[in-house]
Amino acid sequence: PHKRAVHLLELLGKPILEESSTALLDMEFLTEVMTIREQVDSILLEHGDTSSSSNSSSSELDELLKPMWYENQTKMDETCQALTQAFEQVDLEEAVKLAAQLQYWNRIDETIRDKLHSLEK
Image 1 (cartoon, helix red, strand yellow):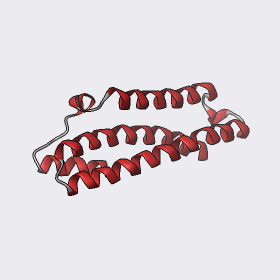
Image 2 (cartoon, helix red, strand yellow; image 1 turned 135 degrees about the vertical axis):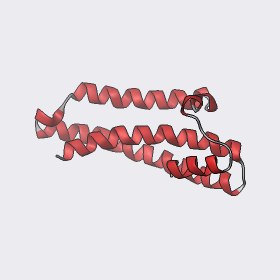
Image 3 (cartoon, rainbow, N blue to C red; image 1 turned 90 degrees about the horizontal axis):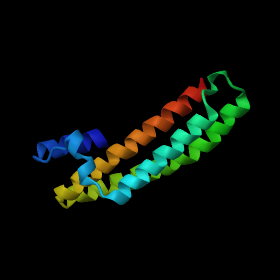
Image 4 (tube, rainbow, N blue to C red; image 1 turned 45 degrees about the vertical axis):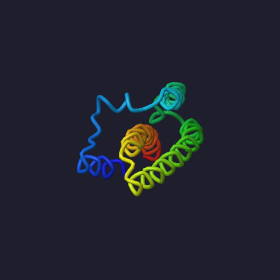
């Protein structure tokens, strides 16, 4: 959804530039994202590399990360719904802001998903 939104915005003359996406977002949103990333990083640091650890450690890490992943999925879904509505209403300023938000949710998703996939191996 994010790549599609970015492409649509480019076609409509409202491209999102990587370096300006942070400026589009309010401090409350950025603080929330930073807090979530810190929580994920803290869990990963606390549990270290589980590839050589016991199954219980991997299981514990899985139990800690999965709820965070599900919560992030909900945020992504809500953002996608709002983004769809913004495009339907041709509110490009809002669409740009929501696409930038979705970019942050995607990065959190990738971090958690990558770690969960490494636990499955």
